[in-house]
Image 1 (cartoon, one colour):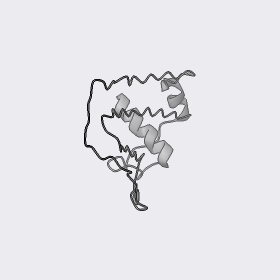
Image 2: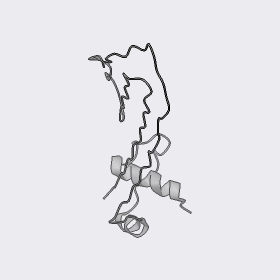
Image 3: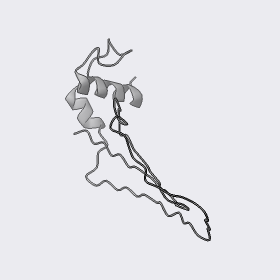
Length: 106
């Protein structure tokens, strides 16, 4: 019996070119298109909601020196994925960062 994780693994194998694409699944066979068509759970509408509503108040700073910050030429050398750089050159600053990644396989 196939579990959802086995279907996902088979889908990845099919998308990546079959056997040998993922370690541990060398003997797996891609799932037939008809089977994938029955199992998909896609939707035409994607809704994402990000809530970042922090506040900074009633802060006091004195004798603080703020300056520029830079990212060097090789800062992202050999980076993989989605590198994010969050910089702050001020005082009493609230930094909120959020990322929504939506992957649709069609």
